[in-house]
Length: 292
Image (cartoon, rainbow, N blue to C red; front, side, top):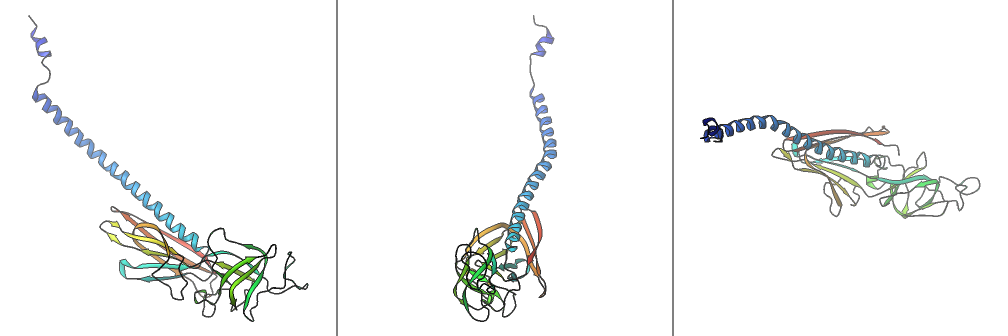
């Protein structure tokens, strides 16, 4: 006959004991989830903020890099709309090369000692269609030359946007001695004190269009290029190429400060991106060289 203690040991769990165990495990799981939930949410929030910060940082650095190559005194800013939906536009003429032009022949009747040099200075007394370059010429590794600019001051009578200091570019020719040929004869209004000229591409605009949708931003930051030059700053760009730089834009601002006698201008950028309640705001200042 089996001992009573052995019979009790072989019975297993009762239903009540299983219910008690399940209840205890459920309580422990609930307590554990309360401790795990916040760290997990914090990790997700940190990842979202890092992603937003990376996008914003890349965007403002791209703008800054472009602005540093802007033709002196060509940066301009305008807005459209009002309040939180105000759109900001910053436009400039990018330089893709440049050098120094021959101002006058030397005593030997040529512009320089370079092989093939000729007496072909740039005239400021009458229209001229070509000129010799003195020394090396910085030619673009990217971008298309559209214009040649000389001494752009950004003032009436010497304003690139009005076409005063721009001439349509045709070609760069020659061997050691380079010659710039214009598409049409041009008389530039002022000579450069340093005999400098710039090779200029088509205008570029950055448009920041902020917008909020719920707890996320739904606006955009877009770069436009390849459109026609206009004396009045445009806010629409028919036929232009466009590339989005950032989405989820909730707020932004662009400010440009320059006095008439300043050799530098200061562009202040502010960009706020928001996603699922998480937001990142980056501010950046760009010093623009305005020495023509």
